[in-house]
Length: 89
Image (tube, rainbow, N blue to C red; front, side, top):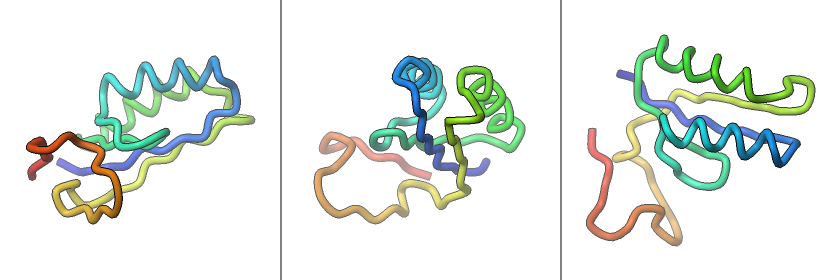
């Protein structure tokens, strides 16, 4: 299983809401427009195909980056998960 960060910049508020509603059902919200997704490449491709149907490729940008598991992430500032909750490999 691979680990991905999915990030997007959506130009239209209506499309932004549509993309957010879809992605948040399949990936963990990390911060605004950034989500953590675990799965194989075909899972990611399926998710991105669904996102593609919700964006305007002339104005919107969606990217997926392969990353280490979030349990290895470094953080400075306000935690994004409540105390006592963590993500593990």
